[in-house]
Image (cartoon, rainbow, N blue to C red; front, side):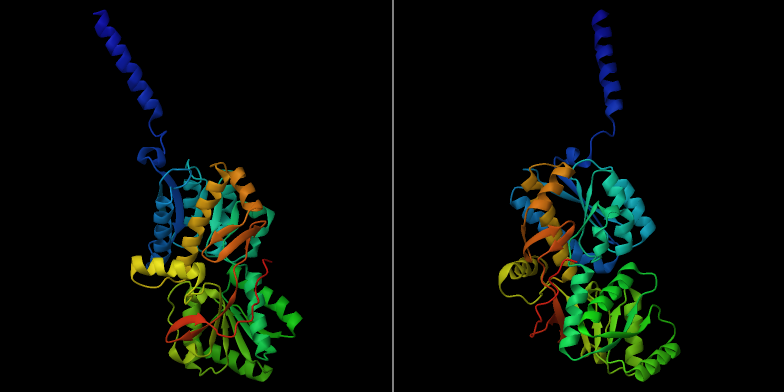
Length: 383
């Protein structure tokens, strides 16, 4: 009888212990792997190349020994490119144990909104797609900019316009969009130094008839070129309007044009120059190695989102391995004190803005955006 009581007592202790620990194990412990959270609008078709870049990097990292000798697995989180959803996702995954670096969100407004959520939970956010230098502000301490800043890209765009003798421009950006507004402000600041004047600024795109009014106004003001920092559907609307109104002015576009496959009318492609930084035609160097590896796995060349996803994933792994720690502050110290070899070459952080990615203009050739031959070698500044 006593023996039976001892057995029952032992079973009761085990059962209670099991109930108390239910849910304590995180995904990494259950699978034996280190789970890395990645956030993007994965439900959208355009996200496929970004996911490919993450997967390719994760495979290479595991082939090289993983992070701190642990194999990694990717936990994909869909924020729908929606700020409210982004906050919900960030709040949920910020409490996950394990790897302290989150890779993602797609839009500037989302990243600025969730940066503090990660900081409060001792997480770091690597923002692979946005270009806002606002990440350097103290209130956004939880986030790192893994792309050239809006300042660097505006500098390059202005250099290119000045080299082509352009002095009077009209600018267009999407209403309420933080990135577009900030980018145009950077264009204005650099343009002032280069003798380029913004003679008209438009923050919304009404109907086609009203757009014709813009063109008449620009004619009267002597506008020589159009600068666009539009995002999303506004990109398609703008180019549709430009085609239907017979625009012949050159169009200088921010890199948003190549974030996803927007439809650009053929008549407008020859007039468009896009400020970018991923050399998708590289035949030597780190970019060419990445292009070859990506093409071998996916049967096509990578685009800018694929390159950014790949770079950010490798950068996160390299930082943790260099720190020999999963503690956020230790990794932050390593990020501040070291350079890292990436798909773009040697990069470092100035505070939380990436340095070292060359910025240049792309043009359309055979329906593909490719770097111009006569690069200005501008756009190197971090802020």
